[in-house]
Length: 447
Image (cartoon, rainbow, N blue to C red; front, top):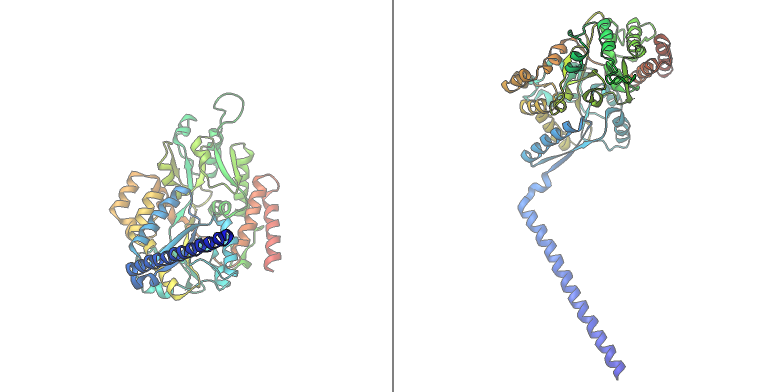
């Protein structure tokens, strides 16, 4: 009897536990449904209408990414039916494999922030939608700087819209110029070379160089090519001959201006007045800020960061061989083939980024040059330019700017030129030999 009684009690206990468990489960389900119902009532049918888009970019330095994210958050708050996810996917050389893998895998972002040189390659892959129709109906069209349309057009169609524009000049430390007894800004290549020598000093007297006159990028990446091309253009050279719309017009060994530009960079290194960056790190400003170097090629995207430091800095135009020249940079926004709803939402966000308010805010905080004409002419931006005269150098230098080609295959050309620049500054090859090796690589690829 005792065994039976104990067994019966156990069964009763189990039944009670099962009953309470079912009750608890029921209550949980009711709670979940209630919460879901409340959320559905709060958002109504609008929950199904929210369009999510992804935005890939490589905005740098990190402080500028914070500025961009703040502006993206502002858009999301004011456009509840469109939500933009902003993703930093590395610098542009790091982005390329990710972009191509995403396209091949049929999983691209909705929007891509990238320099226009990628246009032909993405068009050839059939990855993009043309923006002609959307832009023609947009009130923002007439506010875009007309000089930027050449970076948007390929084969008679527009494939992107501008996000920001820039060019490159020489950042320098006025206090280091003063300490070295330099009173005039160098204007020519020869003057620049002599100033770089004067700025290279043993500051503490230990027999070792503590301060170099110049900082040059080391590597074969796009930043190296972007900053070297103006020196070739300054000598009257062209990267592509003929119609300028295909890689077939590249003839590097015969380009005397390219040879001269490579030799100029090599001279700066052989003089002992140049510090080379780490591999593919030539855009960083740490050596300039710390006083290890006195001059550096860079762009206005650093102005926001530099303003937050206590370090003195100035900017002057790139030194001239025959003609003033600089590289037109900046990034455009590309629209990938997704769905009509997402494409429409992506263009809505792009209109926001091209607007006067956005362009003014990001220019003041990050240093980008506005692509919006109303923004450039606004009282707020003009006051900023007066307060930060370094901006004027980039604005005035823009009229001498040149854009890189946007046809398919430019990435191959850039890689080959980058290899030549790297070989010359490292003393591994003479300029003409390096260009001949680059041409041989291109001939194998294109012919």
